[in-house]
Image (cartoon, rainbow, N blue to C red; front, side, top):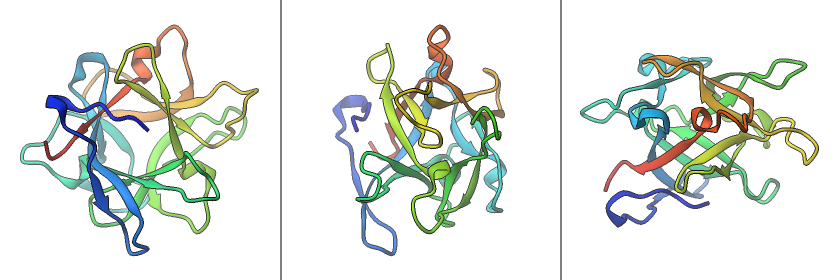
Length: 181
């Protein structure tokens, strides 16, 4: 996984969760269009099922906009949990529609085992330093990847995972800015 860093900052490893795993981050996950929204746990709400949205960066920084990349482990190499720094150990979770695989992104407790709706990987975009965030749910070589985007380029727009758009790629592109640089 390659990370976009400003001012030459190198990716930082954060000590892991209670299992002692090594995580990457924390990062702001920043939206490409306009570069002004980051993924945010709506309202700093710690309840499971809380929606993930795009929002302006909070100053001072708050954990609901900071994310760790937690490796899925040897059962799913190259896949990651995206965990909030809110102290809940909740991770981004796709709530897929039964037929399309697309759906909203919400916060849920990390499942036992590698639940495909909670695992994500990065695919390069046409813009260097920006990535698609692909869901493992339904991922295969014969299916269009389902990636995270926002429902609009407005504050508090919902984060959703939809099939990758090859014509509107910028609306599904994300950069990763280290929180501490």
